[in-house]
Amino acid sequence: MDEPVDYWETLVQSTLRGRWAANDGFDYRTALSAIRQPVLHVISDGDTIAGEPSEAIAFLSPLRDRTVWHLGPAHPEPWRTLKPTHMGLVTHPQSEPIWDAVAAWLRETLARAD
Image (cartoon, rainbow, N blue to C red; front, side, top):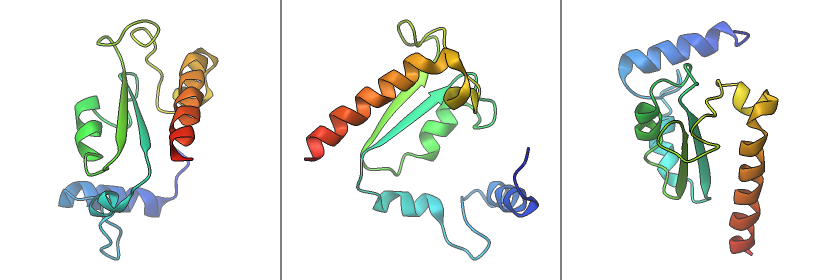
């Protein structure tokens, strides 16, 4: 990992406290409910950094306008067999169908915003 030590210390403390908070006490998870824009939340069974998919879904549940895509066996092809890692989702060429779908989601979502 190439993240700074302060990042990991904050992450560990947040995990131990059971809330996603900065060292100064700012509660990021609570602040999620203030976000009014649509959010696309893409989760992969191959992502071992973000934890279990159900945990990732619950973690961001305060978001008001969220679309969740869970890449794994519960989805039709090609989603069922695509299980990119945390960074593979945005860097691996096999994730191209996901990128195309994200672009389509953005086009549709932004068109509704006009």
